[in-house]
Amino acid sequence: MNLEFTHKPNYYLFAQLLIRHIENYITKHPDANNAIFDLRDVYELFRQDRASTTTNLDGIFNIVDDYKVETLNGDQKLITGHSIDTVNNSLLIDFNQEALESLKSGKQIIEPDASILD
Image (cartoon, rainbow, N blue to C red):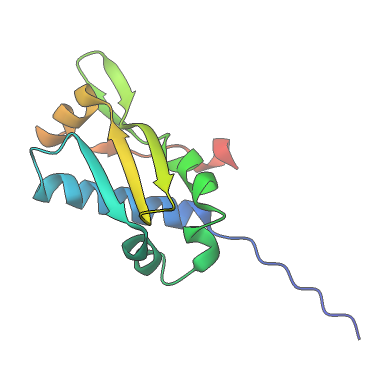
């Protein structure tokens, strides 16, 4: 008997969940210039998918990094960088300040074209 089993993580779904979580954070913390999330919260956000919270998180951020916001100087990426602090079990996200201000003023997040990224 031969069982073919493949597991392809849904990075696009997790990227969308993470960007909406970030968007909610910005709404709740309008003075924030960056964000720090406990990785346990990200684990819960990803419905306890440990691989997506650890090994695949950088791959998910390859998609999250392509979300943009319309600004006076054209569409700009919302996130300029991220780092994972394994000692403190946290995720630090740095925002593009111009895109952040546009988002706070009511502009919508522009999703990347998934057909290009796949």
